Structure formats: structure tokens, C-alpha cells
Image 1 (cartoon, helix red, strand yellow):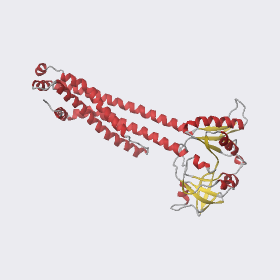
Image 2: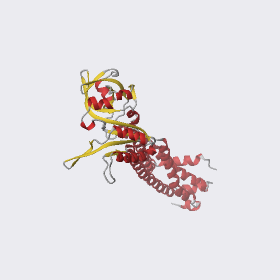
Image 3: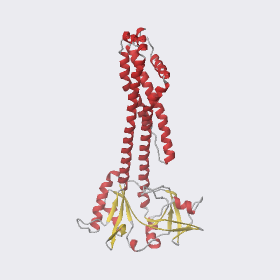
Length: 411
């Protein structure tokens, strides 16, 4: 009686006797497993990248921007009509329970000077709530206080890019910089956020109190009085974002006395929703590519079945001799089934190495985050084994059902 190890040894000997044919047979499995791992890794990396972008913007975030103005029949674009005020922000915070925090802001640009160095950057006039709304942490120093906002204090927080440009190798906290010729004390440095979804450097920015920006640095007709450049609204949970968006729209239409059917004089953007749509698109594309890659596994399985059928035909007399000396049909079935599964597993292992190596190569070349999940590796390997069992069973059963006498007569 054959031991359990004998069919495996027989299978390995048979595969070694036809090395080139075995390698070509497993090629479909190798390509399929490698493609599945690479595609899933790229898709998971895309989801991770989108999650980072959402985190850099601030979660549960809605942006309210001013409307458009018209000059000579030409619409000048968003933000050209000053329609959003600090009172709008206060009312949103007070009257919409689903809103966690509101942060009005103004924006401009200017020259920052320290010693003999200078840097042109974005200037944001904000309130202390802004940093919590945007989930922006302080790396060193502190944020400004509500009292400093009320008193239009000349204090500033610097982004990482500005620090690298004006204070290379130094701690800027406590130093005095000049912003559009106005002296400001540096009270803090913000932790880096990297690029925005639009590709601009979010760390190339400085923050000063909202009142200070309007009275001392930016000013101008568009942000005079209580006019602001926009409002960041943070919902209490992600599930409430769409509800808050509609409530903010209704409230602002009432405050701005807009009639039914009249266009909004403001714009509302739900950035989280936009990025989630982008994430879903990435996931759908990754699944599509993985499905296409899985076809290679099926094609590889068909190749295994064809080669195993050829092998059964070539070894008909050998099968007859085995049966004649006492081998059972189950032993013949096990031998050829193990041979098919071994082919699949060898292809699966080679595919895993190529898939992991290919994923790392893509990450290095494209500078794109690649996350190799162990579950995708296990799934691809398990599927390759299943392919071997499924497509190897028919040739194995055909071999096991051969009549010993007819097999011995086969030429």
C-alpha cells in the first residue's frame, strides 16, 4: 500500500522530468497571482492616499465661499462678490446643533521678512477654532488666544515651508518678523500637512488673528467691516455632513434674503464627499483590475488541465503497470491531483514574489503609496491552489478510471 508521501514524490519526479513544460504551464498562474497582488496593493495604497488627503483637510468639513460678481455682463468667478460675514459664522454656530465648530477666515498674500531673508507666502487671518476645524496641530509654541483676536494682536504662526525658508536650522518662536512691513512676534510653528488635493503646498502659509489681518495687513474693500473670505464648518460626525450642508444653505439664504428660485450668492463645497467619491473610484478601478487579473488564473488553470490530460495520455502504460502491481484508483487519483496542485502552488509562490517585488518597484518609481496586505497574498495563493484542485480533478479522475488491461496494451 502506498504511503501518503509517495504520490507527492511521484508528482515532483514527473514535474522534474519536464521542467520547461512545467514552467510554461505555471506561467498563467504566476502572472495571475502577481497581477492580483499588484492591483490590490495599488488600490489599497490609493485608498490610503485619499484618507491622508481627507485628514490633511480636516474631517467632516464643509467650506462656505463668497458668491460671484458680474462686470459688464461677465461673471468674474467665485469669491469675487463679498457676501459672507462674521455674523453668518456666528449664526451657523448658534442655530445649527449638528455643527461642531465654525471658523471664518480671510486670505491674502504678502512678503515675510526676517533679517536679510524674505519669503512671499499665503497669509491667513483666522480664529483659534480654525486649527481644530482643520485638525492642524502646533509643532512648537502655541496658538493665539481669543483675547489676541479681539485685540488685533500682532502675533503669527508659521507653516513648515516658511520656517525652512526664513529660519533654516533655527527655532523661530520668540523672534520678530515683518509681514508687509508690520512687525509680528512668532508664537508657534505648525506641524506639516504636505500637499493639498489640488497639489499646492499647504505648509507655505502663515496665520495671524482674523482682526489683525483685516485691520493691519490685508484690509481693502472686499474684507472691510465684518466681511470674511469664507467659513470652514465642521460637522459633529461624518454622517451629519450632508445634513449640515443643507441646513447651512437654508440658513444663509434666509439671512441673505434670497427669494425662492433666486441663485445662491455663496458657494458650499463638501470636500470630504469629493474625496470619498475619488476613493470609491480608486476602489472600483482596483477591483476591476483585480478581476481582470483573476482571468489569468483561470487561463492558467485551463493550461494545467490541458497539460495534465497530455500527461495522462503519455503515461497510460505507467498507470497500467501501477495498477497491475496493486495501486488503487484512489492512489492514481491522488498522484495526478497532487501533481496539478503542486504546479499551481509553485506558480502561486513565484507569483507572490513577483507581485510583492512589482508592488515595491511601482512604489519606488512612481512615488505612490503601496500597501501590501497579507490577506491579498493569502487570497491569491489560496485561489491558485483551488485552481489546481478544480482543473486538475478531471485529468486525475480520467487517469484513475483507466482499465489496467487496456492501459497496458496502450502504445
